[in-house]
Length: 489
Image (cartoon, rainbow, N blue to C red; front, side):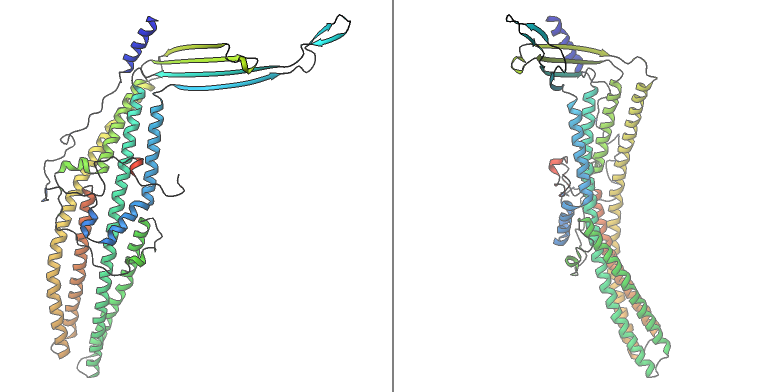
């Protein structure tokens, strides 16, 4: 008994060891994260969980919420998250013994012969003992691989990290869907504004064509003015179908992003509304925030942790493996006496790889190479996140400046076009001058719309670059994500 206790104690001590490197999170310095941005950005961070509310547009909020609940890319991400969870359960099951039971019944009957002949005292001859026999059996088998060098525990560690990475992948998909809905919503409103501009310009061109026709009939100008007016009017009219096509594409895209048919949202978006403006500034915080806020960065970090654990899994194969198995069996001719006699057995075996052509060592080196690649990918995702933020900050500042300048240009072009139109009516200028001034007005008006659209788009890009749209304090799991659509269970 003492020897058995000593063996069990030694096994417990050995099973507390885990070969392979222990994972250590990388510091911001190791990942190349600077202390400050290289561009001018608001230092104070803000709550970005539901950043679309900053645009103060209820329709936009409704669409983002619909996409978060019904987008099919998200449904696929949830399914992958469920797969990762079940793989973790599979890995954890290796930490426990495997127990199986069995039961059987058999009966044999004599087809011919098999009995004994007896002569009774009265001389009668009879046959006895030729009937069939029944047999009942029950068995219980158990086996357990002692995790002496932590290979199983490293496998569980890798599966848990992969499960967490799948959760962050889901969050990354969520952020992408949210930003895509918002971006296409801005485009739809911008196309509505461009359509309004084009139709207003077309009305002006109709008026100019009418004026030119009157002046030609009066002999005040040649028919060249009328032809120029007709050409300008046709060019303006030709832009309208293209803008309508672009508007339809944006609305259709929003429909698909929200898990609906392309045309499902046309009634909702039919009413013309302005391009959402949003706040003038966004608090970007410090660069190190991306390590916590960006789910794609956190997914890359978890992939590195999983790859590091896989080194231990591969390395444990180089060491001995201890397997313990046992069984209990019962057999009887009738079920009532089945448990009268029970036999049991216990077996322990140890195995060690002696020669495998270098396969196991190659697997260790392969796992180390995979961990190196995962670290490079992690660092790359961090640097890309920093790049996204700085590019979005500069794009927002540029769009804001362009909006200010186009507002000035639009005001000046509008005044100039009004004067040119009045002078043309009075015969004080030619049609070429009028056409030039109105072309400048059209350009400034569309430029202002585009600048406002670019500003809203840059804001959306900045929110996405900062990792807005989810709660970074909670690692997404199957229980914290929306339910899968019907029919996927």
